[in-house]
Image (cartoon, rainbow, N blue to C red; front, side, top):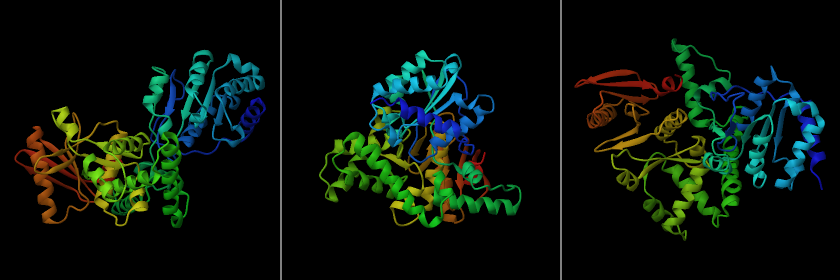
Length: 422
């Protein structure tokens, strides 16, 4: 049975309705360049509304009927096969035959629901006068998969949950950083962001359902994007592994240590299973690995890695106890990742949280007020500066500001919220 009538109905319904209102994100997605734009990222991070925001901008100069949006998780399209996709183009150009001579913008949401979708996208790109935007659950729309199927034709933009600046914007918060009242306001919202996390939907939901919503997100990501896709035999192991990693957030961990812990919990598995499951969690943008900095690549690979999660809300939903210092460190990692930095951590006698090429060492410390904490943090930073031959280091705290000069080394102590708003 042809899918053409269904495609016609879906296209017509979308074009007739007003565009959904979408707030601006920090990611500047191009409107008209000769590249297939892909938006990889975790579920519920706001990828669809990034598409709607692009459409809002285009609609100022492009007629609405040339902006074509389809969500391939629409149940009216099931079951969908590759050969059905010809009906999509036929339906659209039958509805708007004059657009065959014009440029058309196609927005394909959850395109991975179409088997062998990349063949269709490549053919459309090569034969039609168009621009193409793709989103999908991150585990099925990875940059490396796109690069293989559509080599040289794609440009990815990672969509993460709201960063702190976006969180303020979505909540309508405007505060003057130069006044004591403004700083108190920002610090209040900063603490709330660290606990609530940045999934956009939570901004518009009552706090009483936040935890339950996050648990549903986690189940969706684990079971739909990972268990189903990779046909994993032990969903309970996958969920426990994620909970274990979240409980040990930002702590150096080796595969061997994880393997022995899982085994002690009664799971029957091999080390290769641990490697595979960690890889799947990384591919889905649920966790991120940060390796130690070492001049030897081989030594670097043999050392424990620090693991971070896509959103601090995971910590509150899956574990007991706040551990706000680790959550703050996680937030700083996500900020650095979104700047495109390839970060490492440093460890000699002391540990420094982040270092990257052509950067200065950066440490994260929630509370910088006790003498014991100050001594430990300054000692660790000085050791790192001497080891790297650098003269400047940065320590980010919840709310402390200071400048420390020791042996021609300058250590800046700054509030993390201020750093994130730069």
